[in-house]
Image (tube, rainbow, N blue to C red):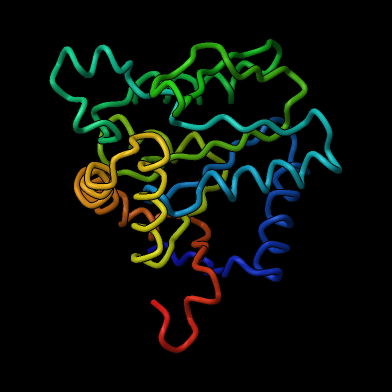
Length: 229
């Protein structure tokens, strides 16, 4: 049984994560690093931090390709009555995402394009991310990288290493609610989304922490103080 390394999101933990990523960059050929976790756990924050720090010493050699670019179009979800479940596994083009990862691993002599999800328009934009041949490390992040149902169960084998991000439950729900509120402008709807569909999806991916190489505790240290949750 896999025993993941547990790290806190503090200075020591960040330095260990950078060292792991640097080790991937020293391998021959292109490597893929996956960062998984529940909605609101901090996957994007950690991925963007890692990208920024790695590019300092490895310019034009690292790219970030989030899974969220494979959201099905809002119009298609609405036509199928699935808009209220947006973010669930079957509201993504999982097969397309797996195909992209296969391309990124095998087709390293040509530029590959990937979609990106834009929250301000609530839709994915095709061809928004370019991955040129010189990229040696691709970071990809999303909820379902370690989800053990088809087609998502094909993802882990295409990644050289996978990390799982965890966050205090109360803080995670607060962040997810705030994110919805930023775009929905309705507190009741934001809370309903966070505690309903997003929470169901969080439970689906929770077991992925036991299939990861590293579990990152992203909980702010202030939450550990007496009287704070």
